[in-house]
Amino acid sequence: MDLVPKVKVFFASFLFALSSVGSIRHWHFASQPLGCEHLVTNLPGQPDVNFKHYAGYLTVNEQNGRALFYWFYEATTHPDEKALVLWLNGGPGCSSVGYGATQEIGPFIVDTNGHGLKYNPYSWNTEANMLFLESPVGVGFSYSNTTNDYHIIGDEFTANDSYAFLQKWFLMFPSYRKRAFYIAGESYAGKYVPELAELIIDKNNDPSLYIDLKAILLGNPETSDAEDWRGMVDYAWSHAVISDETHKIIRESCNFDSNYTWSNGDCTESVDELIKQYKEIDIFSLYTSVCMGDSASSDDRFKQIMFRPSSKKMPRIMGGYDPCRDEYAKAFYNRREVQKALHVSDGHVLKNWSICNKKIFEEWLDSKTSVLPIYKKLIARGLKIWVYSGDTDGGVSVLSTRYSLSSLGLQITKAWRPWYHQKQVSGWFQEYEGLTFATFRGAGHAVPIFKPSNSLAFFSAFLLGESLPCER
Ligand SMILES: *[C@@H]1O[C@H](CO)[C@@H](O)[C@H](O)[C@H]1NC(C)=O
Ligand SMILES: *[C@@H]1O[C@H](CO)[C@@H](O)[C@H](O)[C@H]1NC(C)=O
Ligand SMILES: *[C@@H]1O[C@H](CO)[C@@H](O)[C@H](O)[C@H]1NC(C)=O
Ligand SMILES: *[C@@H]1O[C@H](CO)[C@@H](O)[C@H](O)[C@H]1NC(C)=O
View (cartoon, rainbow, N blue to C red):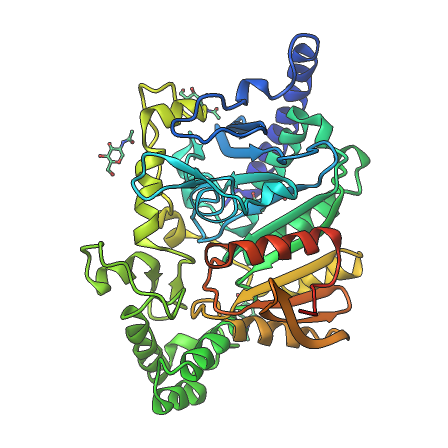
């Protein structure tokens, strides 16, 4: 494989992309404010608001014709004083617009008939300027004109394109260039977020590229494959999803630290038993009902989110898939007038939007087995890491996260205790040197869906770098 020339072409076109936007910028400067061609003015069904929001494509690679779609909401008040936060959903292959922006923490939540939007009073743009990115190409509206790109996507490709996107975005919105910057995300973004953070601090050696990254925020994050699996198994057992016998066989026959975990027949059989039980309920929210409006059988439903490339490889479970809510988002984003308003299409030739791209998920190339070494690097550089976990998620369970964090061996600075919201215990938390861990009591995989008010309070504490309220 002639990797080297490809890399050079990529890098050259990346530089070219940066310089070409630079010149466009000067051209625009005299006439109109930057970014205004992306201002969203007539989104169907949008509630009246007093903040501006922008959506559209930025080209991250000219050579191959790769463009990423973003949606940016200014803060509801004092946007010029508030931080900038990038939000990423996982999958891999799922949309930050479909999940983060319109189901979880954005100001406009897709309502249940797919024809309108309702205002979310707990939107995170009450605290910060919120940027939602559909990444990598193939996800949501983001695309490449080079079909082959879709077959070479993995963690590193995604980090590179997301980074190129950020640099271009800052050229379009220069007043945010020096702003305090944070990255937040959920699920498989547990890998994306630290990886992008690492790339940013490495590139920050060049002052012209400097991004003032302060901290990262991770929700029910995939972190370390071995710990994630151990946690999922123990969680299923301790929450009465699998039997003592199945648990025992998995514990005895599965070596999650090995590259050959799945060549042990006892292990794969007993893990299949675990999967079989989770097919019956919602793995991402143990105590809520499954979506009954969906005609697909539980087997078919699960096939959407599970993929086993071969018996030799680890099965993968796609994060956060909810067939009930997801259909509404799909109906909304495939509407002609919506695509036009978001600067996605001319309203004649439409883009096909879906919330997760299964092909991207299945063909995912490289995935870091653990991002814990990156945690260490970021902490050593003075960045803060906050990790939260909805404690009714069986997919990336609270045990998975606790096993990962405990393996870091960080010094505890504030011992385990409850944190409160509206006089109730919202969860528990513990502070370490450089890292805060908190649980959300009774929340599933996508925490803000279940606990919108608590999540907003939590997000505010994160931005302020303050301890969570530990008194009623
Ligand atoms: C992709 O191709 C279409 C059709 O030729 C073109 O309009 C568009 O600008 C291209 N996208 C990028 C990012 O180059
Ligand atoms: C990511 O970018 C770096 C250069 O910044 C390059 O060396 C590497 O090959 C790129 N990786 C991918 C998968 O594009
Ligand atoms: C597993 O594979 C990776 C990459 O192929 C390698 O770096 C690692 O050392 C292997 N681990 C074990 C325990 O063999
Ligand atoms: C969108 O997807 C549907 C079904 O997968 C397909 O029939 C249609 O041609 C696609 N449209 C576009 C514009 O790609």
